[in-house]
Length: 203
Image 1: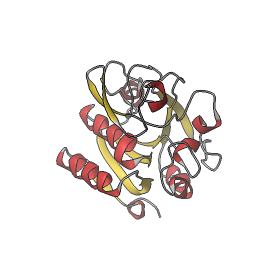
Image 2: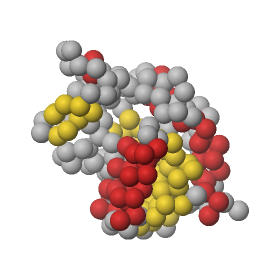
Image 3: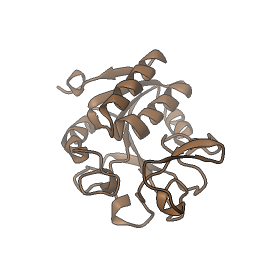
Image 4: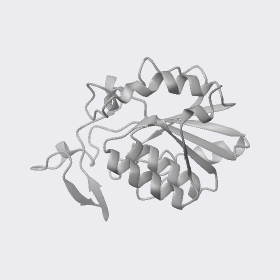
């Protein structure tokens, strides 16, 4: 079975959000169309406590986008975003959620960031996504969403590590950095990932 993973299509990653990805909401009509091509659709949701240590505001004298070491891992500091219970953490209203069978929240441990929909960045905790997909007989996953060079990339990379065939639908993602997305897709391809455009799937 093939599954579609919708990564972090939340207000804080779209225009006007606290960690805006340029034109992030522009993928939503395409993502809605793509859902119709899959038997199973799941979504990930960034869901941070306000004291999350990836937030620059929780480090005195630090600014967003600086890099520190956090519990032995390199950590880019971000603006506060996708804080539990806030509007910014909600899925965008334009996103069709009717076909989404399950939502996997990530980033809830304040001591470690979590880009991937499968594991936190230290691989200390898993979200249960891999087991859920296996239980439903999924062999192939397709990944779309925000941002292409961070959470989409790390979700796709972990899908490959978990043994799933993985495809990123490039025009159904938007990235913080286009250079970063090129590097990400090159790395995924070197590990067996596939990068396509949506026209390969849509009638």
